[in-house]
Image 1 (tube, rainbow, N blue to C red):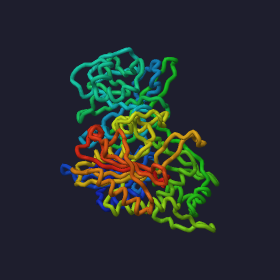
Image 2 (image 1 turned 180 degrees about the vertical axis):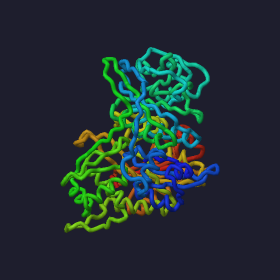
Image 3 (image 1 turned 90 degrees about the vertical axis):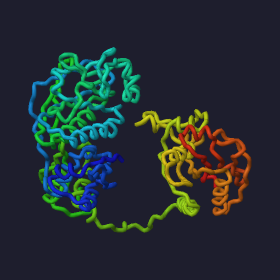
Image 4 (image 1 turned 120 degrees about the vertical axis):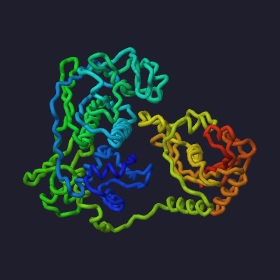
Amino acid sequence: MPTVNIKKYDLERLVNMPLSDKYIEEKFPLMGVEVEDIYEEDGEKIIQFSINPNRPDYLSIEGLARGFRGFIGVDLGLTKYDVEKSDIKLYVEDVKTRPYIAMALIKGIIIDEYVLESIINLQEKLHWVLGRDRKKVAIGVHDFDKVQPPFYYKEVEDIRFVPLGFDEELSAREILEKHEKGIKYRHLIKDKFPVIVDKEGKVLSLPPIINGELTRVTEKTRNILIDVTGTDKYAVEKTLNILVTALSERKYAKIHSVEVIYKENKKEVYPKLDYDSLDVDYKNINKILGLNLQPGIIINYLRRAKMDADFLGDKLRVYIPPYRVDIFEERDIAEEVAISYGYDKFKGEYPPIATIGELDKFEKKLDNIRDIMVGFGFYEVINLMLSNDKILFKNMNIEDNNYIEVLKPASIEHRILRKSLLPQILETLKINQHKAFPLKIFEIGDCVEIDLEQENRVREIKKICAAILDNEASVNDIKAICEGLLRELKLNYEIERYEHPSFIKGRCGKVVVDDKVIGFFGEIHPEVITNFEIEFPVAVFELDLDKI
């Protein structure tokens, strides 16, 4: 889940009340926001929150404060957002790569270091959560007073401007080669470059790559122009709603509209801050939650969730804030009632069934293996099943084209299903090699291989991989651990010589049980160690637990 670091002083002034650390740790988890840590940095107290991906409106301190005020009952019901009409226009030409755009203006905002940091952080978090790392949605935030409306959104063969963070003018093609963001996101641009320019041709943004240095937002900025471009109209509109409603929580900030005009004279006025509504049966809400709440009480709980509702006989018409993207059906409304009612008030009951579940026998064996490894002094780690070809194959000195790849990955770093735990174990060692030696870790996890005999053409395999990082880690060290595990599992095994491109020749062996090779162990080759940027010797073993 995404995390956000919030400065306590800024949270207190937005909530408009002092908050003790204990109160924060007690109350925020009850509204579905985990408190990961509270610490001091440069004289400021920082609170690290873990946010559920279904609540992107909580990715900013403004959204968190707004939700918290409702949860504790000091600011109930829907927040009314007044949008003042402006004469600002944005003309859209045929932009094929990112056809949708929305724009709005925030006037009169007082920007200090806290507000500026919040804008930057919210922008980056939304790029990841709603924007799928800018592929689906990209955001531009500009100093409005540096440009002149009307604005134009179009595609060009090339264009020159000073990108954010640079002091020299570059062409769009040069930005893709020289700028950090250009290199990272150039795969999102195809033949032509989408750009936003003003009346005089000044470049505001090259979405989804970079804004222009001309419109950099600073503490002197008082009027902020926001553009959101993307490939999904709903995501673009909701992202803009989250941004403008968050910034409107700041002192003196006023929302102003922008008229977007397309070539065929189709017009849209943004932001669209009308309330959505959903009709639900309050009896079903009670049934889902196992409660017996009167309609008026349910409405009161919805008002704590910053919603509102009307009672229509046996139905409730629930009004949903424009920044919410997670309310689709009756169960979503029931969840909001449950949060406001208090999860701590629900009492657990055994279901009226004849049988009670228990842990699977294989999982019990895995827990036993975990206990054995912990007894050997190893720490358990957990990695994602998705990785990439550099970690899984290139760094391991392996050539392999027989793998499963995600067709439309959320990130190019996580697109290939692992066949072995070993590469990610080495990646974990790389990250933690600064810790005290010897560093001993293990993982028990799933791997996936192609198997055309299976109905779904794949086979899931449970494996264990363990590693020792130390100044003098050797094949004998890991062999002793591997054999110790096999003996604890009461297996008759044999050790045979084995060659593997990831291991030092002559310092690698394979494990055979009942004439089946179930795994291997050895010292990692220096070239592989260098590929993973590890500075010390590593010895590992990996076993196929499905074969044991």
